[in-house]
Image (cartoon, rainbow, N blue to C red; front, side, top):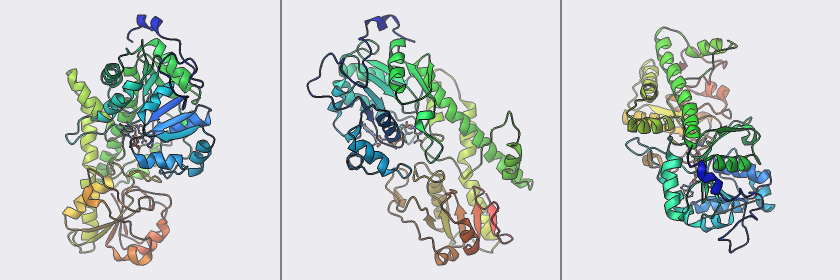
Length: 459
Ligand SMILES: NC(=O)c1ccc[n+]([C@@H]2O[C@H](COP(=O)([O-])OP(=O)(O)OC[C@H]3O[C@@H](n4cnc5c(N)ncnc54)[C@H](O)[C@@H]3O)[C@@H](O)[C@H]2O)c1
């Protein structure tokens, strides 16, 4: 905890719902109580939750298409209803813009921008730094800035603080408040509600923490204050590392048990009946999404600065990144059993999204599978009801513009293997069993569905 003494010099915490205690720099009528920067998978639902709770929100994003969609009451995220956005934009509680000068008119700013890895698999905090540069000139005495993007310990009180102080001429903890609060969004889970997910918060000073608690308390039921921004940053990394390591464990067991003729899915389902001391994790074709494959390596990178090594993280990464090779090997075995080769085979990858029932294909292992099969000479197509067309990405530009095949008997029956990479609930697996010649199943999606002998290969 830093600058505890300086906290006494802080301006009194402003009420985010009124913004009336603004002391200087206000030249226009207030646009909102709160600005949320980054209207993506994290920022948009958070904005809706605050707006629903009576805190007026302006969403700031550099993507004009998202700004336009919000202001027209349209949704661009499958599991967020357009009505939810439209209702709040019409009531005046929610709007969007690209103009960062709006920060002058709000009491608090929450940052939810991407934190990817660069091509050398090192943290790329440029989105955070650029956001800091954009908002700094507009910070006012007493503005609260909270970072929510997942990142290594030290980002908020070192990297972001430096940019904000340099651009605003104000000092953190004295001129403006600074905090970190990790997002725990669970996209696609209908039982997940932002309001009821406890929110961990760490402040740069005790005063910063109080200010952040006052803000989040308006929209979130349970707050979990911790001693510093770093403790809050480290909490999020622990949560995601825990998942990554446990997924690696079951991925490794999948391969070992398969060699022994044991079905790992049956074993996990039996083990999870233990009422204490066990939590089920499930194997898959490799890690995907914006969090689990990336966040632990933020810590790995930062730990080196302290002469520390994150051996569990590295080992889990090694096991998880080997999964697509294992799956491709299983596809080869399934084809071999039909006297076919991967080279020249028609392979349909079912599911491009990295997890079921969402349209998010970032870091999806499906692309790795498609690349590997393609390199081996397979003719690759895909089906995903939520990703009709592949958008342009830095990692897989060669798949951009590819279109999902139609879900039709003739299309499915024509391919040599259907490779289930994502188990979307909307897919009719009975039809798949009736139509497909051969299925390689990485998600146990065919469990309980009658299939012909030798038709389904688990991978
Ligand atoms: N998606 C999840 O389930 C999830 C869960 C927990 C934490 N997180 C973390 O939350 C953060 C955001 O993730 P996301 O999934 O919402 O990302 P996203 O890509 O869906 O959204 C990020 C948004 O930020 C915008 N943006 C980028 N740079 C900007 C800038 N300089 N100024 C303004 N806007 C900018 C982009 O246009 C985009 O709309 C990441 O750190 C991620 O690791 C994500």
